[in-house]
Image (cartoon, rainbow, N blue to C red; front, side, top):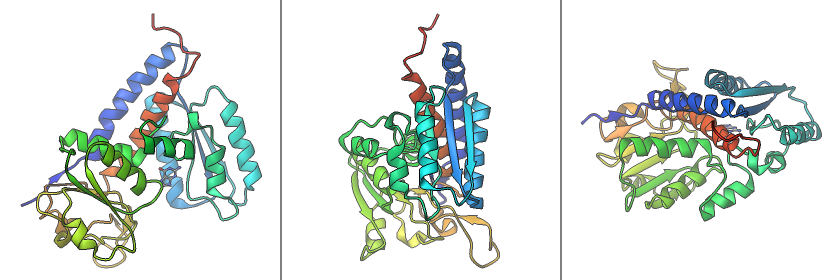
Length: 292
Ligand code: GUN
């Protein structure tokens, strides 16, 4: 059996078209949605992600502010900039790209963002609200995965869902969204004793660990939906240096029922959902005029 490919890039294009439509309608009502993106330092990978986020804003008619701060920026300087953006009515979303340089505490930075502008959904107010059911924003990557599962028509009520990876950005919020949708959820972490025993039970397997091709086809239940959040590079072999995920695509594709490719799977959806969150924030702007 060869798995169906889940085309995140195509779904992201559809979602961004709707975002552009919504942005134009909001702009016509006097409020252009706005997103501020802050990058500290010179990580090449972060620079690529941030550039794609800013480009997506421009294409969708969302106002964007991009601050590229030097790697030795102090925490106080960054917090002062966040305070300015919190007070700026043209900015509906604030995203500080992670990871941050060592002199800056990411938790203090996330805590400084107005929860009403926290389009990443990382503020403890939104993370806590996700746990109890109604956050202002859902974290973009898990939100994007849920959209992909919805488009596939994956039944989640009563399904066995296994999330490999327990990060605050992906694994934990992913598990909560799957739980809310009625799945029976297992969260595995780096200390899980018999990982294959868990992954082989999964009707829906989401992998977000950041380790090159660690989930192989023999760890996948036949017919399962496999969502690969990883973004790594082959460390050796004929494809050395090329992008790959946390799942060994070549073996898993013969076992799964549907699978996301890397690249072109989850990555584009993360950016699309950031745009969606920015639109949702702008819709709450009290300056919005009634539609004519
Ligand atoms: N670094 C990796 N993924 C993300 C993300 O979704 N948001 C932010 N702010 N930083 C990231």
